[in-house]
Length: 267
Image 1 (cartoon, rainbow, N blue to C red):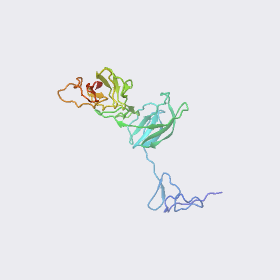
Image 2: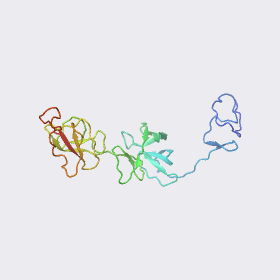
Image 3: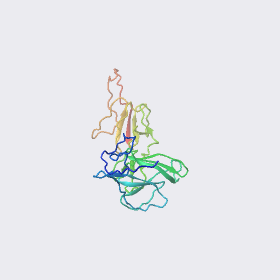
Image 4: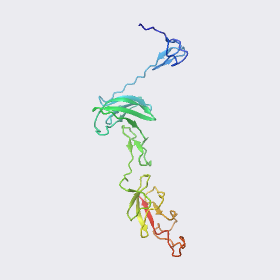
C-alpha cells in the first residue's frame, strides 16, 4: 500500500483530534510539533536556536531548559564557561555512594516549579530527584532552621540550615526542671534556652508552651499557674518572689501560685 502525499498549504481549522478516520484533511491538523502556521495558513518548521558552549569532556549528562537557563547534570560540581544563555550544572549525588558517576539522564523537566530529574548511575541504580533551589544567600539575613540556600555563584548544590540543637530536650509540659537544663521549642527557631533560675520544692514546666524570644540573652518565664509576668524597668530579672496570694485556693494558709517557676535564658 503506497502512501498518498497531501500538501498542507491552507490550514484553517487548527488542530482537530476528533477526526480519527478517513483521509487526511488539508485544512486541519491532528498534531503539530516544533512548527507554526504562518499568516497564509501554511505550516512551517520552527527554527532551532543556535548556541555554542564547551562543556567539560565526559563530565556532564543530559540537557534541559529551566528558569531561562540551560541545565546539565553531574555527580560533582563542574566549572562551565560563561555563555548566553547561561549554562549551569546541577549536582546529583547517589544516596549511598556519593562518588558514583551518572550514566545517563532518563528525564529532566520542570514539575511544580522545580526540576524533576531521573538519573541512572553507572551501577544501574535509578533515582528520582526534585531539585528545590531555595533562595540565593544574602549577607545579614536571618535564616530559620530548614531553610534552603544557594551560593551567589551557583555550584549546583543547595544548602539546608541545621540549627545544631538536636541534642537538647524538646519542650514538654509538666516535666521536672533543674538549673542548667537546656530546652528547645517544639518548633525549631534556631535557639536553645537554659534554665537560669528555678523556684519551689519541685520546679516543673508549665501546661502551655511559652512564647519563646528570639534574641540572644532574652529571658522567658514558665509557670503552670500564672501568665508570664511583664518585665518592668528597674525590677529584678524574676529571681525574687512576689507576696503570697491569700485565699486563692479557698484556704487561709496563703498558698502561693508562684512557688514552682522557671526562668530560662535564650542562647
